[in-house]
Image 1 (cartoon, rainbow, N blue to C red):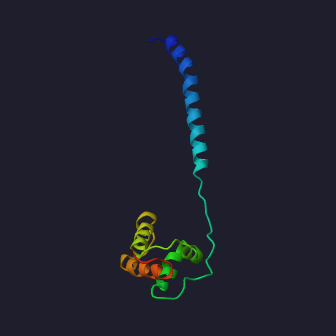
Image 2: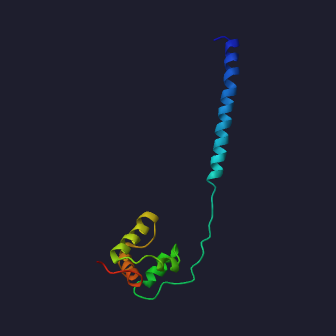
Image 3: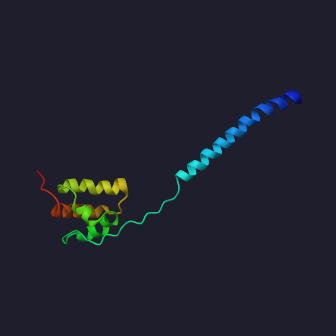
Length: 118
């Protein structure tokens, strides 16, 4: 390819390449703004779960993310249903509750706000 043809090709492709570079840079900077770091301060629960066997687990584990009022307003569940809910919190949402405390917490929650198995 001779020099004049090369100059014509560069003259035609340079604006296209420049436009692509600008569009990519613009999209990148807009995407970066979309994913800005956010800090949230959660309200502190001043209430505690009612006394009973397992209250220490509920107060120490559930109230990390939930208020006592939120825990106490749940629909009445059986012990097995509470076990399912607790395991959902552990497995899907990363609740740091040790596996060996699940049964005691489920029994406690069913006792304060639950129904008997059919």
